[in-house]
Amino acid sequence: MRPVAVVSYAQHASAREDNRNEVEILLPVLREALEPTGLTTQDIGFTVSGSSDYLAGQAFAFVSALDAVGPWPPIAESHVEMDGAFALYEAWVRLQHGDIDTALVYAFGKSSPGDIARVLSLQLDPYLVGPLWPDAVSLAALQARALLDADGIGEKDLARVVARDRRNAAGNPHAQVSEQTDEATLLAEPLYADPLRKHDCPPVSDGAAVVVLAAGDRARELAERPAWIRGIDHRIEGQYVGSRDLTVSASTRIAAQRAGVDGRADLAELHAPFSHQELILLEALGLDEDTTAVNPSGGALVSNPVMVAGLVRIGEAARRVSAGEGQRAVAHATSGPCLQQNLVCVLEAEQ
Amino acid sequence: MSAADGSKPVKGIVTPIRLDYRYTPGAAQSRFLHGLKEGRLLGRRCPQCGKVYVPPRGGCPMCGVEFAEEVEVADTGTLVTYAVVNVNFANRVIDLPYISGEVLFDGSDMTSMVLVQGVSPDEVRMGMRVRAHWLPRDEWDYSFTNIDYVEPIDEPDADYESFKEAL
Image (tube, rainbow over all chains, first blue to last red; front, top):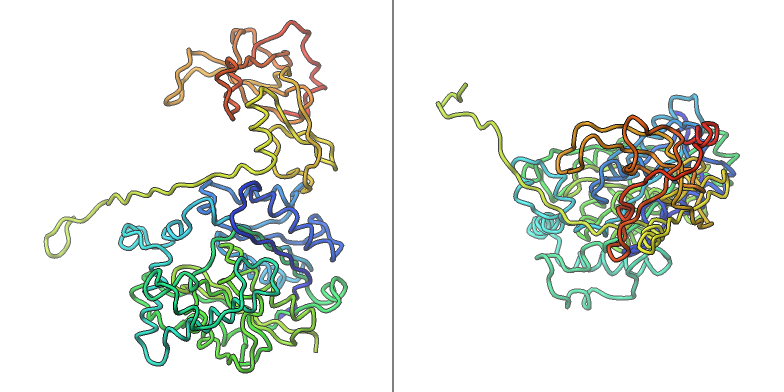
């Protein structure tokens, strides 16, 4: 495989943006990511974005977002109606062709214009499950209940995840929630969607993220310490939530195996919008919290711009590797209800 | 065709979908909409290529840079192209035939689609000079429909060279 690295990354996330639209949020993030590389959007070999028109409630919203890129004269450009992490996968594949050396990946999404938990119901099959309108929080609660009913995991474990993520969020300027708290305090909160409490669910976030990828020596020219993608893979499970064992993540396990996670990581950024999903993911990834710093950014529980949060996991992991906070990182992104589709990416600094 | 047990096949189901959104036009378009409420056309100029966008977007789609300077453009302009409409759209009640035009308001580099009145289909032409006819002031809203239509003004036609970029 051709070596490809993350050479730059920027993000913006916040609670409801009442004034700026998607393009206005994206423009400064694009500038921030490109500036350190000295590249312009016209220098980039391949540009790809991840977003969902259902968030804005506007057909072809992703096309107007191209305003931010300045695609004239025409550029080579693509889009996935998914989280930007999956757009990054497309860019990585495209770079394997060998004829271009750089790729620009961007993701944007405002979760605030609609009722995001209901908007996400449109991911479900339109005939049998969709018409029942189970919202994203209710589906996640069903998964959490299944997990708690299985052996060995209790509410306290969920609270431990939340407390850790909220503590970690202290250093994250994009976090919407950040506090020093403990399990007992969290468990005293009322239930929201049994067995989940509000803090087990993600905040509603608007945001954008941009990653610049480069291959081989071009990456070494563009960044002092590129974060090399040593392995990347994604797998999907069946559409019917009821036909899956929700207490495990088979797709994450396979993706982790193929990406070469091998139980080793100094840090891991997991895209778990609900607390119990972190526990499922750690198990599937084969990572141990004693040896791996989990969600040093605070993860999706402290900031969750839908369609962006997965790319942010890769960006945050890469940023920490580039900053020397770790030699090897695992980033994970998810899509669909109850961890239906999962992407795993292993990032390393130069040996 | 029927299933093995003799039951009739289900050929379709209706599954209603309703989602409500609170739309955010964005900073630039909000300014534009506020301008319309006051009977003004507010655009923005790209600092790189100099083009003035009305209505303004978040940034220049050609250059990919943020707009900075706000520019007010005139409500007079040039009809750069048009279509004579002989079939009404659903829910649209205008006497046929009518003229739908693309108008380059003076000071703008982008055309706007507006209804053209006060000229017959056999006399309308590219390059005609026009002026916006606004609804009565008390009907103004945050909407481009404040401009009811454009109508010809007594000026010589604009030279083709002056508007060919906008076509």
